[in-house]
Length: 119
Image (cartoon, rainbow, N blue to C red):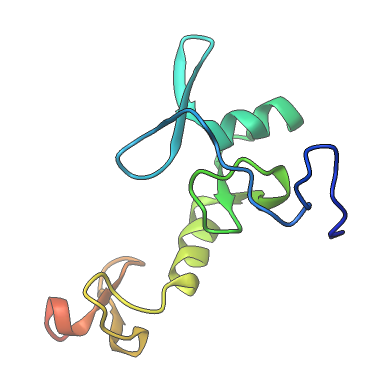
């Protein structure tokens, strides 16, 4: 990616923060054609058309309010979950990733210290 500044003065690698309503989970929200959706999803739709069925839009930058198309990619649910798990370095209480373990039934990873030893 180029670091050249465009007309907006932003470099291509910078996040473009959504300036509208930010929901409780930190995502920008818009109403489009009578339907509420994430602002990042709407930007994807405007640029590339409908999100293919079974895919979700992921922020590669990790910034939930970013609407920079260069920071968005379409992933399956499994890919999306895997990507988020790989990005995590600690649990919500700050225990290191080395304490994570896989639940017996399913693909969810949990902190062993927070949830007790996982079998």
